[in-house]
Length: 239
Ligand code: ADP
Ligand code: ADP
Image (cartoon, rainbow, N blue to C red; front, side, top):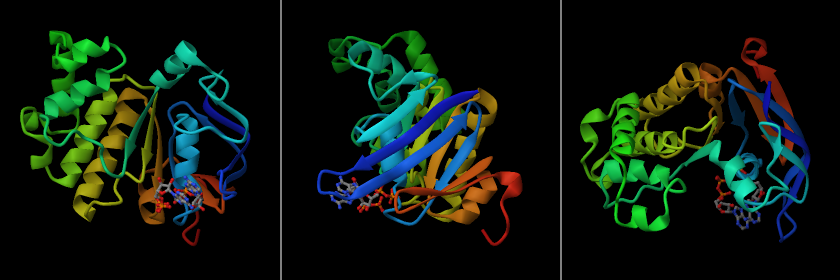
């Protein structure tokens, strides 16, 4: 079943740069899709459109059958709640504890004043701890975020994203600033969410070899166009 559908999607930036050029792409529930392409190919533009972090110029994007392009207000928030996203730079609150950072993933479920005063329920605190366990960092719950290594911070960002109980996890170059060993741990965590929780994962990567190692499907972009789309079993050595 389709969970993300791009139909004839174009994105031209205000300065005239073409970000996406007539993208047609259907991603099904449970897939682990890696999007590869050189810097500037449009990977980030594509993921940001799927979450409506920016608008597209024309075309339709459906999330679990609902248009995210035309959704407004409450409806938009409901569509977005299904989609979690992590970034290259982790976006943690550096001076907060890991626990507070993870609980921030609950924002939107609470009135703002509750999150300001840190009034999270015991159930949410339990869930935060469980999500941290899931990324194998259970012992870091009360550490300050900036005491962790880059790889550990990204795994905290994953735990935070899980507070949303998303159906879809988008990851925009999540390992770009990490060394090879921590890269594997982050990719392993994403694989685990995909396999154990059934979350559909879409990851932007530069590395074709990593894509081959983790993806169930590899999609290639070049100059805003979709130029490659294969199930992992059909990917050739020379691709
Ligand atoms: P990447 O390697 O991820 O493509 P970029 O340097 O292209 O890194 O992009 C970094 C940031 O700058 C992004 O937020 C992107 O949206 C923005 N950006 C990229 N190209 C342009 C541009 N031509 N004009 C304005 N902003 C840009
Ligand atoms: P990738 O993620 O594959 O590196 P991007 O999606 O960041 O590629 O960029 C695709 C194209 O859009 C590039 O030519 C980039 O310079 C341009 N671009 C990205 N962000 C902006 C922006 N905010 N303003 C103008 N051009 C941008």
